[in-house]
Structure formats: structure tokens, C-alpha cells
Image (cartoon, rainbow, N blue to C red):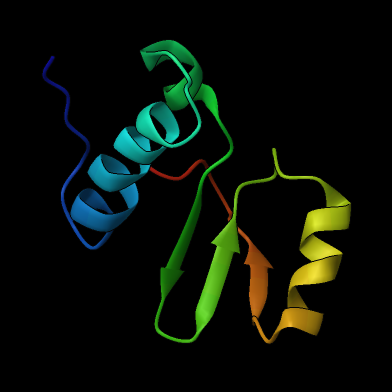
Length: 76
């Protein structure tokens, strides 16, 4: 299997590692892994795609995360 994502900060940790983790750790097939909600930590902020639930977004600050909604899809 080969796959790729746009370059930049997201490529290695957010793109490649994320897809592989969704497949191997969560048992998703390639399509489901690619369609799963994405998140990306950069600096001191964790961005979530709007496909994450509001409950997830609301819970993360109590766990010490600074979160924001992503303005656009992450790593399409």
C-alpha cells in the first residue's frame, strides 16, 4: 500500500502515522481510516476537525489541552 498527504507539519505525524494508527490500532480499513475525524497538535494548540463531537471538544480542556476547531479539513 502506498499513500501520501500534503507536506508541512502534518505530513509525518498527523498524516502518515494517523492513518496507520487508525488501521493497526483501531482495526479500520483504508477508507474508514482516511474518513475518520482528524486532529493535529501544533505548538500548544490541538486542532480538531468539525467532524469530532462537541462533547469531545468540551472535554479536552479539562484534561489540560488547549483546543480549537480547525478552519478547514486537516490533511485531505
